[in-house]
View 1 (tube, rainbow, N blue to C red):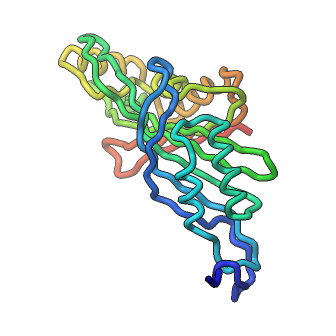
View 2 (view 1 turned 90 degrees about the horizontal axis):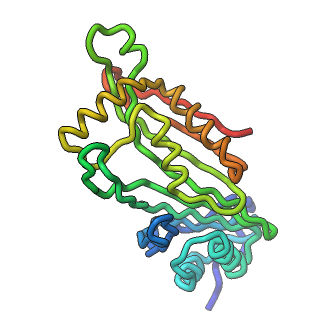
View 3 (view 1 turned 90 degrees about the vertical axis):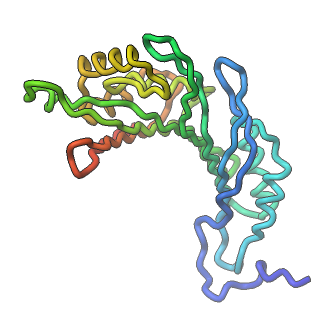
Length: 255
């Protein structure tokens, strides 16, 4: 049968990335306490396309993913991208897997246990045998405004903020390590289950540690700087302001 994809393109222009996204895949990730955790990932796969090819072979992405094991680690991720490069005769391959990562979290006073979910991702690009591998996690925290607290006779405005960490590292880094740094950087962690005594504790503790969005992003970056395995990071913090009609944000990227 005629292979239309390999025919000449009408507009001879290279494409940086072409591929498939919104695939769903069972995934096994490492869990510091349990050893491993089963989850579901949303998958994006792509390659570069030279100017002289009309199109890529989309079905080959699905074939490569189907032959890949469900366990996620550096070597397995590199093997997936290597296979894609071979199957699609590409120079460069890219993959991104986004997935929920769940931890059992204990309320601070009542000791009640519940499940907390964090949005995570792994992203990698393989070219000339070299893999650039990034681990990302989004962590919600609570912040109390220092300015509002300082100028108010009673109370201060508080809100939820989302900390987004992307990191590159040598060796191995637990997802839990990044979550712990983030949760320690705001006025208070966020919990999925709080009884009245827990709410009292969280409210009083957070008001004793007011933080601007600038404080939060610096705290996270400082924590990452102290991790010897981290060789690059980018931290974005977005605060969903409760009394302003805007969001506040701050970002730090390791040079």
